[in-house]
Amino acid sequence: MKKLIVITGASSGIGREIAKRFSQNNHPVLLLSRRLDRMEELDLENSMCKSVDVTDLEKMKEAIREAEEKYGKVDCLINCAGIMLLGHPEEQSFKEWNDMIDVNIKGILTGTNIVLKDMVKRNEGTVVNISSIAGRKTFDNHAVYCGTKFAVHAISENIRKEVASSNVRVITIAPGVVETPLLSHTTDENIKENYNEWKKTIESGLEPEKIASCIEFAYNQPQDVCIREIVIAKTKQED
Ligand code: NDP
Image (cartoon, rainbow, N blue to C red; front, top):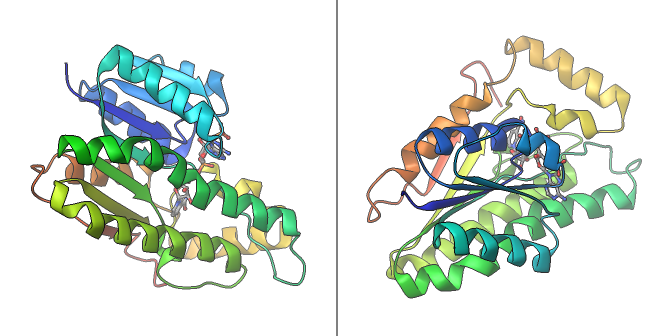
């Protein structure tokens, strides 16, 4: 059997496509998110689905340990869970800022904290963090979302350097707009409307399958090749 891949945010959008792709490639997969039914309905071979909030270290630990008992050590952790709550800084609630910081930043740290030490000890393993183009440049109404994604870039690059000598890879994926329900959680209707209008100028975002292909490509390089970062967007996306 191939090695175990853990995917957070596997109930929707990009994470769901990644889970399908790695399962098609005969990897056992651990699917994590809060909506169990959405993951179970995929009915993937050699899969385990657990309803876990990515900010909950103990629950994450439990799920990963259970999967490792069944399928062996985690070879790749793909941190895909995230939320994008766009808002004007004067209008947006503190709760929305707090939620983005919790899920987008702490949510990549829980899994990393659980698997990294063991990967270093084994001299193998890969962590893939889904950041965003919003982790490289700022956009209106994106202040805290951009802040969380800049943090993902910084944390990923710093950890990459510090585990490199142990042959462990840390890969950052920075997509532009992708067609998923990500925007739907933004509460400001005006911002959502303007975003959707702008999206028409690029003739819709990328299909999530394209992001899954990038991750598949980066992961399938030999362990001594680390594709540190992939930035991918629709050609017509100028910013
Ligand atoms: P979706 O909304 O389709 O998926 C988000 C996923 O995150 C869902 O599976 C959701 O599952 C999970 N999630 C959210 N909060 C939590 C939580 N507290 N605990 C566990 N899981 C959680 O969006 P995308 O697929 O687009 O987003 C995936 C990643 O890609 C995000 O990090 C996003 O920032 C990034 N990205 C997306 C872009 C886009 O345009 N779509 C562009 C650039 C980056 P559930 O609700 O069941 O818990």
